[in-house]
Amino acid sequence: QVQLAESGGGLVQAGGSLRLSCVASERTFSRYVMGWFRQVPGKEHEFVAGIGWSAGLTYYVDSVKGRFTISRDSAKNTVYLQMNNLKPEDTAIYYCAAKAQATTWSAPGTYDYWGQGTQVTVSS
Image (cartoon, rainbow, N blue to C red; front, top):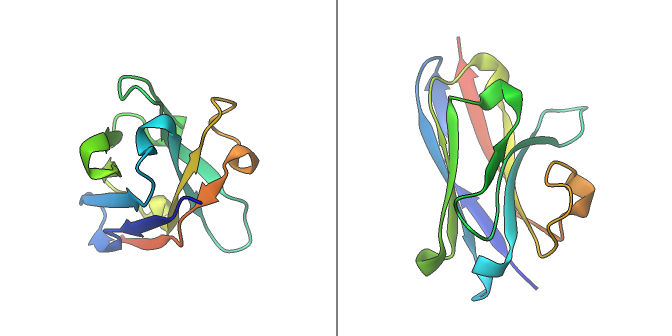
């Protein structure tokens, strides 16, 4: 059982930056594909970014390309989401998720483990 704990959310003005962190309890963290999702009330989880076992393989939803960067530090069992030039439409609860299989990264139903989420609010 992998436990995930997000941190780093908060309130920021449009154009500002935040860095989210997700610490995994599992020592075999490096074997998991990691994803960041976000959710607003009444909507499904939206895929934001994913990173493979090899940190060189990443994938982003079009709306965050060029603004967000996902990275991982296997020595710290941590995945990060650096968010720059934030917009009000980025406001959501952000979740990290992990899975062992390299199936469709953007499908939330394919992930095995989820964190509790961290709130990101961007004011205009």
